[in-house]
Image 1 (cartoon, rainbow, N blue to C red):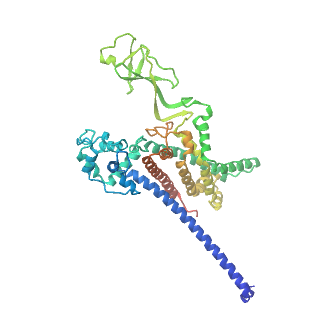
Image 2: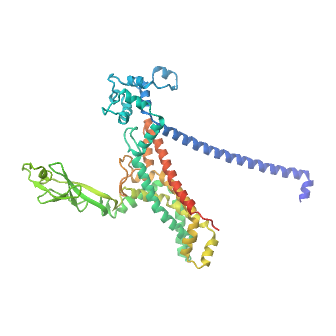
Length: 502
């Protein structure tokens, strides 16, 4: 046949045309793949570039430059008419510090206070006073203002970054930070990982290594496998609703979060303020116990834990003149205010809108991903390793623990990296569980209220003021840093535990 094609020019030309046509299609498909990959990389760089530019605008924020911008505007807050007529604003050199100080110092008293600048520029002066006010007069003199103007951009970057990651949310953009949301994200993701990895890996081992033989067990096995694949595509907001029912309220079987049926690691007190302005604490058995009423012979505790006898005086009696007796005096019939002293291991049922409930809800979101990735990692282990272990007399569990699982750890860690990346960026289930964006402190225990970075970023991005948009971009940078830290730790474990399969 080859000789006939070689001697037949017509058939030879048809074969060459067919070959050249396939080659053209191959080149066209190659160019299509290159174009799509290039477009994806371009979109990624544009997105990251926009975030970094906005974040850098906030992190390199110089209050003196902002004051110069405000000083260059007219009293109505608009640029001068010349700038409005020329179209796009032009950048000009900032005036010398002394000239800018004289322009801002309206009453010419050589003291610049926040009252002398427009309302939207007062946070800048307030921050400069906090950083550079050496004489403590809550104002800036020309020398202090010159010192602030001479501060380098690198110094402001360091200060702004430290302030951003150590401050709580604030109505003023210059004072706002992500400290509570940052630690809330870390705690929630740690809780999610602690529960997800053991459950996910255990389920994958059961589904992959313990194949059933009975028919009804095989059907149950197939039913579980089918539903795990379906759960991987369920929207995360559905898991938020499930989390409210299963974890926040625990199906309503253990009371209400404000009146839990079970608590450990907490002591409740009724707090009294004596006539001598001293705080006394009276222990109560539970948060729902009746309020303590001051009565003769009552014993209380100081905040330091010292037991004292309370001096209860009647409604019409005069106050004692002895300072020590006055410090322990209460009016008969006074009621204390209920407070709680919670330890770091505090736990209650139901969980309420707590860190533990948020972490368990995220566990539901990423658990199917971990199970499927772990199954694929276990399938990738050569069967000859299992056969060799069985041939040496190992039981099934010994083969899994000593041979199969160590060989599958790199693939399992890859699945954990993907699941952690998704958990860190989830906002919908946490919005249903917590819904809080203004918290002034980081969580102190697993039952504490919390906020996460995605919710905080969403709150800032939804505001109309430009400084809050810059805050949102800085928050995204911090969120990416947290994500890369978790991923780097998982990659390190994967590389350390990776072993050759032969």
